Amino acid sequence: SSKYLESHSLNLEAPYCLCVVGENAIQVLDELSHAEKGIIKALEQSGEWSTPLGSYFTAQPLGTQGRIAFVYPGGFNSYLGMGSDIFRTFPGLDEQLSEITDDIGAAIHEHLLYPRSFENLNGERINSLEAELNRDAVAMLISGTTLSVLYTTILRDYFGVQPSAAFGYSLGEISMLFANAAWRDGDLISQRLKQSALFRTRLSGRQEAVREHWGLAGGGTHPAHESIWSNYLLMVAAEKVRPALAQEDQVYLTHINTPRQVVIGGDPAGCLRVIERLKCPHLKAPFDHALHCEAIQSGYAELAVLHTLPTYPSKVASLYSAADFAPLQLESQVVAHKIAGMLVECLDFPRLIRQVYNDGVRIFLELGAGGNCSRWINETLKGEPHLATTINRKGVDDYASILRVIARLVSHGAAVDLSLLYQRETISGYGFLVPCDAPVAGYQGSMR
Image (cartoon, rainbow, N blue to C red; front, side, top):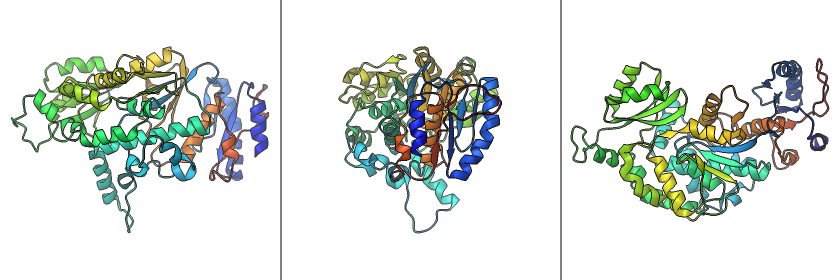
């Protein structure tokens, strides 16, 4: 009710805050019954307490100690049904999205993300549709960027969360620029992507750039119809991978995700030989696009042209790039060449995370499909005070996921505008409760 909102606003200086989330009064009371023991334990261990519904408490609030960063996942994370409830849950989003595109349905690739059918889709059909989406690199890129723009709008414009920094994972830097208004012509880059051969035949599909680099333009030992590239996720440190690559001319270290997780890409047989030498846990990636390696250096010029767009003042002070692990200078040609250079070199994500952390960021909010970046941030900063959480999880209702992020922010003492949660005619579903001045058995202190 409004009395909780008023009490919350009057107790912003209290050292601790418990946030309880539930669909109804019964769930809220049940969450509170579990909170009593959970909070005591969290205070004793200087840790946190949380529940599957999203209730949250931290004994080490970071909102007044460190800055907030928005984090944008890479370009190939879209999945069927992602963000399907978002426009209904937050009316007005379409008007704000229309500022960067004249065709919202095309921007989000609605027919691929939300397939229509007169019959229920069975598992086999769903897998087929997922595979179709994964094969369309352009659809993955554009839809992923669009979703990131929507999530950013919700946190910043609906809930008043104001970050001081932002960064992206690989092609997530494109999402970062659009979501924070440094780029504004979404239809222009969409048109370029659809007309360009880059993500159709140069870096994906036939992968002509790779064939040229390997001297296979005429076919060679790899016929035109044969797949010449695979990507594998390896659970091993980068320093152990590099020596194992020395014997392979067509396998590359493309991404460093964490201090103990990397991606290699290249000739499928060569990748398997590297894995056999390392004898490490591994997983074949669901996409076979070639990025972040010398084999696609010939694509640099076209990548720069693709990403040459007018730039505008950003809504975030510092937009970091993995090109040089520093904030971007928002000048059209500078941005274009930074992104192109970043995409043809190995991506060192832990180094980027560390730089942002060293510059004072302590709260990392992933705004896009999935939660890979949040996991990688947690692994990279393990043992150091920080919060990394994602706004989207496959299979979880959008509103529920957003409330979980809001609960964490509020408990950490970050500035959040909660008034929207009490406009019941606008948003329905989960309730949100911030107990104020609630006594906790066994703890003598102040808590809002």
